[in-house]
Image 1 (cartoon, rainbow, N blue to C red):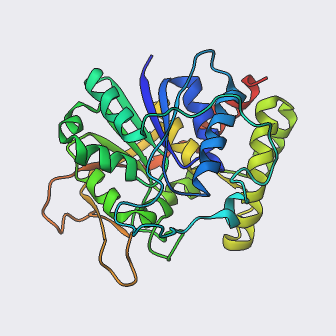
Image 2 (cartoon, rainbow, N blue to C red):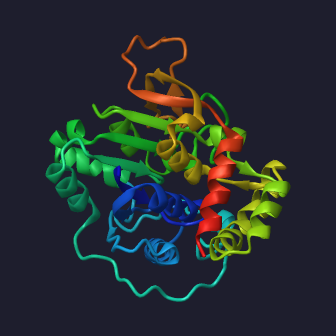
Length: 315
């Protein structure tokens, strides 16, 4: 079974992505980074999600960086409770998890795990890339030993979801995104716009999930109904956007990715209006070697089938 580390700012669809990863992979650990909501709430959400799935083995959760790479001490980054709910779980209430987070730092866990298993560990990056970037900066040699980095982030020359141009994960920590994209590791990126094109659960899909009436379907709907209301008001999309779980589905079931191209991808870190915007160099204007595979077409029905199957199995 393929082995992964999940790097997450656990809220909303991160929870579904973790459930899917637990089905398809041996999850070595979940590392938490500053992102969607208050940091300690993200940690609790990850632990709750793991206990909901109950994989039959311990999945340790590690606390990582609680702010972006170059943030000043005590500076606050933009969180998105208005999208994910105050607790990041759509304001649904769950029992406190029994498991506690580990004492080791997430970055040290990433480095130690990669070094102990060269060429065997893939990273599912569902969040701002701070933890992964710092790990690569601290131990540059691990870049060659990571099997693959699967990145949910950025846009493919489309509108972002933050300041028009930027997608949230890259917007929060553009420097980290730049470091990871320019590392020597093989990478695949599933962008925000891809999730809008191929990863939205619409009314008929939601009705199918409701009809399952399982622990998994209730967990999914309790958390994600909140984001459906936001997307309808913000973008006129009457459905549940599944950004992170689409990435994990593509990583787990490669045939879901119908078209992908290797491009040079980089991130704007200096722009007054476009900080966090990523460039996908379609026409090779930069004359640089491609550094990332970008998913361009994904089987929407295939993804939905995988998601419904997952939720049906969680009893």
